[in-house]
Image (cartoon, rainbow, N blue to C red; front, side, top):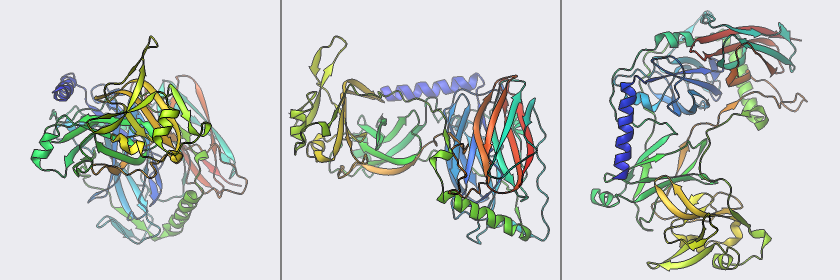
Length: 558
């Protein structure tokens, strides 16, 4: 009942937001417009209020889809804070040559009747240098070099100062300034003359925004983070009905910060209200106390709408581009082989509110090693005890309060192995303690979503990946695609000492640069080790919603 009331309240709030005129539109900028299959597509998200044109501070996730004319071929998620976000999309290596549409939306848009998801889509060209496959009906072979699309008109009072020329493997300092406070994406990329498809600009996006098309009201907006939904399967309707009131959990091995719970409804639905689980990783899905041999489990829903992309401009394939495309393909392969964390700069993420530091940690190498977990708990971990309840052994926590009092937990203690809940405590008691590196103690009540526990203990292994753990039949481990960790591709740690063959096509990318009015921001760009013409592109919005687009070119030669 409490869960139904909560969802009803959120849906009512959504209706109120519509009555107040809140609807969102999302625009995506990318580091460039032409790629080879297997490349990264760096993306920056701008989510604005359709009524005011300024940043919308409501939704916390943008969903991004890449489509051919016939199907969705790639997806990504961007965490939003204050209407701004960043992500990266990895193009499949087997993607056929052709043009593709890239567009974004939020969960709030799914409540709009007749919403046009691809209205502000970006078109990118992809060439596959390892395959002759082409998008069916989407490629025209032409005898003459096609005319490239004209650049958008510069808008907004924004200035880029760049050198006229620079040396290969050297650096170039850009000076960016704006008459208004602004947030922009900045890209420096190599222009080898391959024509790009026609684009809309952020000014087109702003001028084309229309109010919402009506309220449908069946999707809960994502204010704090992604809402991951799913449904219990593998059981009869009567069995699913009997699970109403049970708790389902999701978690990620290696970090207890990503543990979330949901109460199962009578029809088997589950909803996990997360603070965003970042990155692509394994997700452990389990139901608490359903029974060790019960095969019923829950499966997660896809959050992507797979919306029709509409008409896509056909790619004009010109044989004269062959050498340049092959060069791009080789550069992409080299970049993958020599990829390094030093090329990226991590950007801030939304904080998770689960407790970070334990009250006490037991590093087992500091103690006499015992052969059984029972002995470890009795001899070392004084905050835990083992008791038998309803025919099963349970771990119970000695709880502390603000007055330094202590009591034994009467309810359930949350037991984690590498951050993953283990509800059958006998599995922990029979676990090999030689695999455990540290035991962290949290001797106070812990709320995990809708489920309250009296104390929490996390057993961390040396490997951090649940070695030798056999889960119950209802547990499933699935691949999960979360919002990418936001990052800037600055390459500031790159050293041209001969060990890194530097053929980067994107020399610099920052998805979220904030520039104060009247100030000048200096940006140092580490240049690749080849000659050519490079383009600086800035796109974004001023604090009052004014669109910004600026462009500069410079040459790199010896």
